[in-house]
Image (cartoon, rainbow, N blue to C red):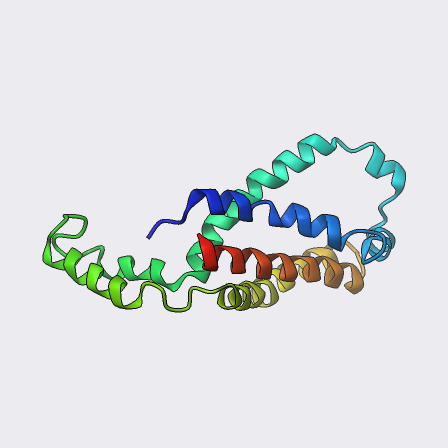
Length: 166
């Protein structure tokens, strides 16, 4: 099962949109600037087009992998890849896969289900990685929690979009 690349491209915009909202001074922007040691001068000196383009490309790559984690049906094919006739249209193995997909192809394909998996990935994978990095960078625990919160929310929304529409 391959994702709809147009939806993946759309989902890759989620980290940018979420960042605009989440790191806005009215929400967590001021706390993040203080915890990270970021200043207005550093922000103004940054190459923002390069940052946004790089973020989008990396987000696209992330969404390709996230699709495989939030859509259970992608795993069906891996169960049969070593079987004789895999990939040959009309073979017994491909007919079995088609039957499974006909019966179960739409199960758990909702925004809520993808958001649940995205949140779990953010909490149990993203949070530890981000907080550990922050601790070794001599940043506060608050800094790690602010950044992890962003990724938990972002992975939830991205996972929801991918599971429901990709």
